[in-house]
Each structure stands twice: as structure tokens, then as C-alpha cells.
Length: 634
Image (cartoon, rainbow, N blue to C red; front, top):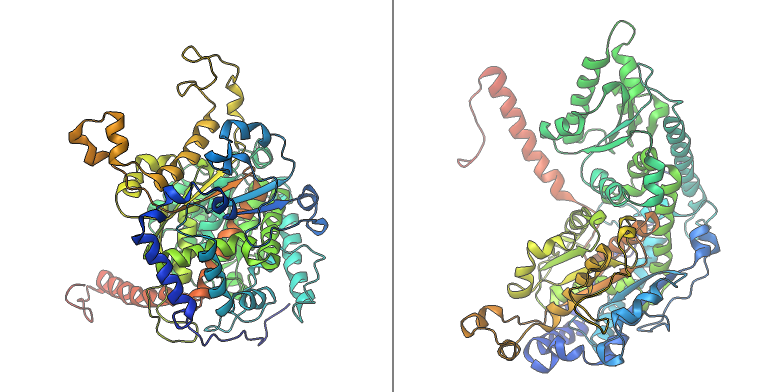
């Protein structure tokens, strides 16, 4: 098995604040804030500019069937393909959404469309950002990441979660001297997951009382739970995934919080005899994870042990582990054949692609569904590593994040997926982004001249409209990403009859006419970015006859930046694509900031203090010891 080597990446010596493009971008951002002619409502009237700020990624059916058959032509810098949907053209192009809808149904290729024309940028601004990326060696850093060099400089590790998504016969040896060994290790684990999940789902592997497993309890923290749980939620209504999970009465739950209430809520409707537990901890010492693991063990032992079932039987038959410390997991009582490895070149935040995510998701949705999830991510990996920067969706998103935070002074960002199935996606990306780039020094250890990292929040649209859109429209300026899908994930809209007639209009334009649920959702998806960008002026209100006393309250300044991502449909392949896009976006930001996005020393710092408090609590409860060694506030 591959254990790592010393292929160290380039150590950045240049800070982004030291290059002339930094000053030029500061001037550009200032112009957008001070010049009324650069208000977004005026910029959106420029069809040529808008069409130049769209990037499209197409995935051929051949790639979906088998990644090695991919035949895909990527757009060049700022290029527009002739198939850009009409609804992304502006009003002066003579098109509208209703004209575009029939074209959606004829699209054969899966596609991702990024429209960033509502950002405070022009083509010239983007060229400055691409020049900044060149000065910061972005392309070289991306290649070092791809080739398995140790881009995690502080811990001297590779960052190769993308390798977990490579096809079996991919030529990784041409990029890494041990590439064939690494890829063989990866697919040996995938083969083991396939075999184990099929035997559990087929009832060949059973619990200590002979019952088949219907309940899967995953115990882990951080990326070991947030990624798998978000993907699980995203696929609950997907046709293929839900079909694979139905009929078994199966439940998949994730227990992460050390608060015992979390365990209680996860297991209160579980039959212990039908429960399989997966413990995920690279070191098998993570305090929260092991606390919950011990609690789960006591629960199962208490419920299942009897005349013919011993504690050893319960642990051996009801527990799996995903860890780098096989000895520790074996010492817990877990059978070695039920222990799956994790590698030091896969950070916890990326562990959804490892056994930590693929095992529970395969047990619930089938291995075939998880393969499509991996294929979707690999599709974006190839796009990210091979596409020119100007048509590279993760790169563009990352550069826009850098521009908004460093140059425009927007230190908060909002993620708005218009899909209920993605309700956990904003919190997962918040964790990924903030723990990656919330740093105070560069990767070389030099203090930063700015506050790195962005505060992330969000919610599934259109729920956010009734939550925080008031702030977005009239309070602080918060750049937003809107994510939508051409097709509904649900089949319930088939109950809607599109042939219904209107009683108030004869020209086909009736704002009161009922539409399908998905069309209602997407109406908001298209409307909100324009509302944020264009706003509403005092003159607009006067013309509408709004009461004078209310006019100040109903003025919307607009000029609020956002990007829109439109995808064909939400399924396992698309979930893989979307998560990979935001992973790469986060990494791009870190490379431009010049920080190490792959370490997380705050975790150890907090845990050190927690251990002291834990020891004090234990001593006080057991021996009545007095509280000592803490500050007055504690």
C-alpha cells in the first residue's frame, strides 16, 4: 500500500498584495462603487458584456456512460457556445424565458451554465483577475495538486481526494511515480465496499441475532459526517437512488454531536438487532466520535446480549470502522475485514469521496448510484485541470470570491440552491470554505496583509426569501450564488395540467395563471438575481403611485452582485459535479490568497483546552476536587 513520499510542492514566496495587478484591481473595485454609470442595472443593458460573462461546461452522454469515453470541447476564455439557453440572453436580445422553456426539453447534453454578468466586473476586470492568477502561479499550483505533490506544506502531505474519483484504468502513473499503486489501493477499497454493501443489502450479512440490517448509523464529525449527510439528503428524491433504497425499510442516520440528544434522536426508532454502525475517525481517537462510539456500543450490548450473544459478538457483527489505525479499531473489537482504510492524503473535509461517504451511501442507495456520484466529480476534475482559465467554472467562481472579499470589501457570502434536496449544501460548503481559508499567515508563514476567509451562510430557495432576503435587498451587500436546475427532481409536478386555461388574459401572458411547482420555484430563481442587481428607485415608486410616506421604505438600491449556476437536473452525477465545483473554488481562493487551505490547527487548539476542562469536571464529580488552573471567567 502507498504510504507517501517527499514530493514537495513549490513554497510560495510572493504575496498577492505585492503584485501590480492587486493595485489595479483595487482601483477597478473603487470605480464600481463610485461611478453611477457602473451600476449593475446599466451594465445588464449591455448585451455584449453579458454574453461575455457566461461560462458553459457540457458533458456528453458518452462520458456519463463511461468516463474514459469523454469527448468534450471546453469554451475558451470568455467564449460563448451557440447553445447558450435563451433565458440567459438579456431583454434587448428579443428573447424571454417562455421562449427558452421548449429548448430545455430538447437538450441532449448535460450542461452547467455559469452566468456571472451580475458581478461588479467587466471583461477588463476579469483579465486583471486572470493576470493576478498567473502572477500567483495558479495553473502551476493546480498541476502540483493534480500530480500529487505535497501542496499541504505545513503537514508535508499530498492532497489527492480527486484520485478517489479516478476511473480504474486512468493513467495516474504518468503524473505520479506511485500512481498505479495509489489507484490500485483506491479501487481495492471500492471493490470491498461494493461487495460488502451488496451482501448487506441482499441479507447475506446479518446482525448478532440473525436479523438483516435495515438501520445504518454513521458516527463521525466534520467532513466525515457533513459531506455524506448532505449527499444522502440530496438523493432522497432522485429517481434512481430512491428506487434503489425503497422496499427495504432502510434508514440512514448520522450522529456527530457529542450531545447525547443527537444519539437519542438518531436511534429512538431503531431496532438494535437491525442496526449496523460505521465509526469514522482517521486516528480512532477523535474525542466526540469515540464518545458516541462507546455510547453506541453500550446501547447495543445492553439491548442484544443474552444467553447466546456475547459482547464480542455484538461488536464484531454490528460495527465497521474507517480509520488509518487498524490496531486501535481492532482493539475496540471490530473485525479486521470490517475495517476500511483512509489515507493521510485525503483531508477530513474531502472524506465524502472515501469510504467515509461511499460506504454508507452504497449501503443505502447502492454502489451503482455512488459510482455516478464519483463520475460526476471526475467530470469536473477534468474540466478544472484541463480547461483554460477563462472558461473554467471553478476558477471563475474562486476569482470572483477573491475579488468580492479582497477588493470590494464584501466579507460575507450567501449560497442559495433552488432545490429543497440541497438544503444541507450551504452548511457543508460553509464548513469546507471557512475551515480551509480562514487563516492569518501565508503558506510560507508570512503574516497576511488582509483578513482571509469569508463568512458563509445560505438556505434552500425559496425559503430564504422569508428569512434573510430582506437583508440582502436593503441591508448589507452580500454576494450570492444562485443554483437552479432545468428539470425537477420530483415527479409530483406531473399532477399539474399545463393545458389549464386563463380567465383573465387572452394573450397567453397571465401572472395569476397557475404554473407547476418547479416553474414557480424557477420563477424566483430567475427573478431574485435581477431584483438584487437592478433594485427599485424613488422614481419607479412615484410612477407606481406608492404612498409618499412609504416610498423611503420601498426603495431598493440594487447593485447587489450575484452569480447564477444553472444545471440540467439534480441526480447523483450532478451532486458530484456541484460538490467538486465548490471544492475546487475553495482551493483556487486559497492559492490566490497564498494560504495553506489544507491544514486546520484550530481543531487541536480547541481540543487541548477541552481536555483540561474534561479532566476538571471528572475530578470534581468523582472526588469533589476544587476548580483550579482556570481564569476567573471560566
